[in-house]
Amino acid sequence: MSLAQPLQDRFGRRIDYLRLSVTDRCDMRCSYCMPQGFSDYEEPQDWLTFEEIERVVASFARMGTSRFRITGGEPLLRRDLSGLATRLARLPGVTDMSLSTNGTQLVRYATDLKAAGITRLNVSLDSLCAERLHRITRRDALAQILDGLLVAKSCGFEPIKINMVVMAGVNEDEIEAMADYCFRHGFVLRLIETMPMGETGRNAGYVDLQPIRQRLQARFGLVDGIVGGGGPARYLVAPDGKGSIGFITPMSQHFCETCNRVRLSVDRHRIETGAPRVS
Image 1 (cartoon, one colour):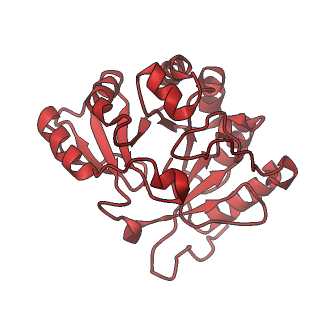
Image 2 (tube, rainbow, N blue to C red; image 1 turned 120 degrees about the horizontal axis):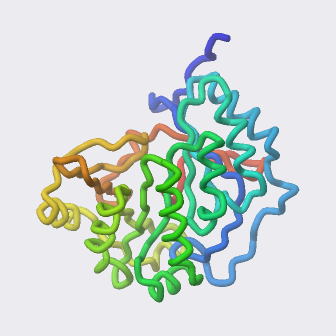
Image 3 (tube, rainbow, N blue to C red; image 1 turned 60 degrees about the vertical axis):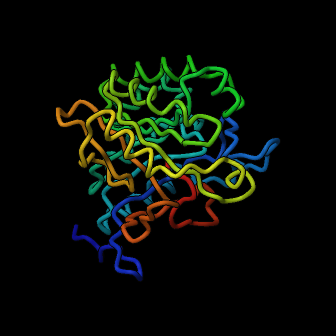
């Protein structure tokens, strides 16, 4: 079957990456993401079905979109997600299937996800201190997440990227410790600037990552490099290849001109372009 006309937006940017939300539900309540007491979720009957998702992904693949990331909310709260991943990974033109998660369900599902065709993981982890992570996410889940990361590592996911949202007065003093942890386990650390979107974003405590980038480069002897994945992060890598740190900087160093993605909402009534938070 011949490919349809490749997707291109009106600015001439080639769209080869689809972020696919399968639920808006989440089992965390991160302070920079969700207002206290939020409960305005979509109803499941309004979600795209697996059949509808498969049909959309197949259409994107025919137009040259080859990379697909399953997201949420927390995607592992959607029943039989590994079954959906299996169906999507088998579609012609799909060359890369990845998943963004908060890690709380990885112990339970990592093996099935790997078998289904998911090869890469992005895991949100903003602190290695249990009490601090509880304050950020409003859930006591650090041990659960760390266990899940080790299970995912043993399953052979490559790479596993740790997404850390850096917040002033909250966790910016943990950056070096998080880098050490990621280097030790072979994970890729990605530091993310907050964006002033909504009340939660405006109150999150923005930190400019450029000075931090310079500090980490000097401390760990890193050089400019590339890490696969197709996302907006700019990377520093260890010369021996045993460690890398990415910087996602929507405020201090814009990357809109290189955007190559669209986002499909789980709500069948709307499709979003771009995403307020990188996951």
